[in-house]
Amino acid sequence: MSPDEWLRSEVMGDRERRIVSDLNTTYLSAEAMVDIERLGIELVEGAPLTVRDYDADDDGNPTWVVAEGVAHFDPERAAWQIAYSMDNVRWEPREG
Image (tube, rainbow, N blue to C red; front, side, top):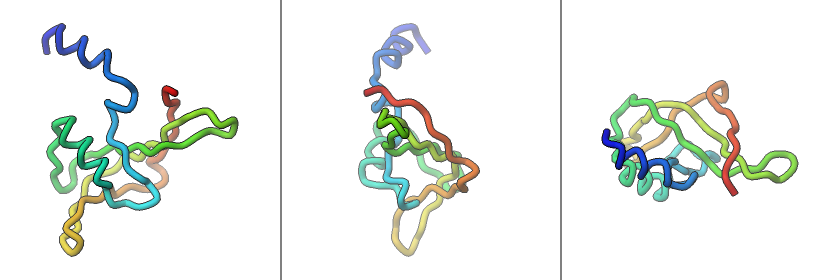
């Protein structure tokens, strides 16, 4: 990776580095699929996948809820999911 590529990644905003999907469901949203394409990620059954959703802490400060799991394709719904357990969920601070 060249220094020019490093600089581009440094100036990306907090949102642009993320796969964001509603974690009230395991199915990846259309927004998440756009993120995956934009980030150049190829979804493959069983591949590690990190997905974030918008949240806030007890004081109302913006946070990410982060789920670490694996990609799974549901052939009946023709849709990708993230398979994870609550043991693999954490919260991270989020820029404004």
